Image (cartoon, rainbow, N blue to C red; front, top):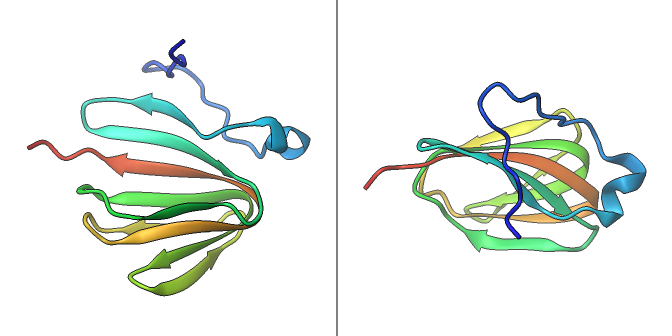
Amino acid sequence: MALAHALSGDPINVQPMGDQLATQKTSAVFKSEQLELIRLVLMAGKSFPPHQVPGEITIQCIEGEIDVTVEGASNVLRPGEMMFLEGGVPHGVVAIKDSSALVTIVLCKA
């Protein structure tokens, strides 16, 4: 079953999940022709392996603490902090604490 994505004009709850965090999974919030928003959920010690995407991205820590490795350099993001990455920049994410983050990806057209 496909997850329902938000539609244009729909309110989107991006508040911390708190006690519900451990039962949640990473999910796409919406995807348009040019933009995708993902709610990344990682428990402490879990990771999203190093990769790169063609388009620019932002990573905004909502709760917990995540270590974003960018071209080999470690950058810890805490709630309320975010990072911008240009397209094609290698990066990976490791949760230091149980965490959720919003990841925005600009989708490049071929």
